[in-house]
Length: 145
Image (tube, rainbow, N blue to C red):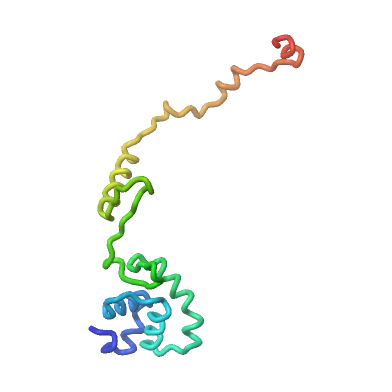
């Protein structure tokens, strides 16, 4: 169902980020924060004062929602529409897609879980170390030199 066909009561139960997702899907192209939020305010019949007071929180919600991606053009788009590539090093030309990164992370987690440290390997008793220490006077130190 398109946003313009929905009743105000139906729109009010949706979060701003859910509305944003619907707007971007319908629009089929990236939009900047102000234009998206203006459209949301128009749909919900919010005043200019409410627009001004809520746009900061709205921007924060977009930055924390994993469905959206802020492009170099300062416009938001759905993350699903974009391939994320991560280059590990400037000198390294190897590029990984998201699946490869997730596979590597899972593998690393499995490796971390397989490492076991026994109590025998951890020396928690420092008293043995102190017994080996001895107090040396300044005179004795000078004699050794």
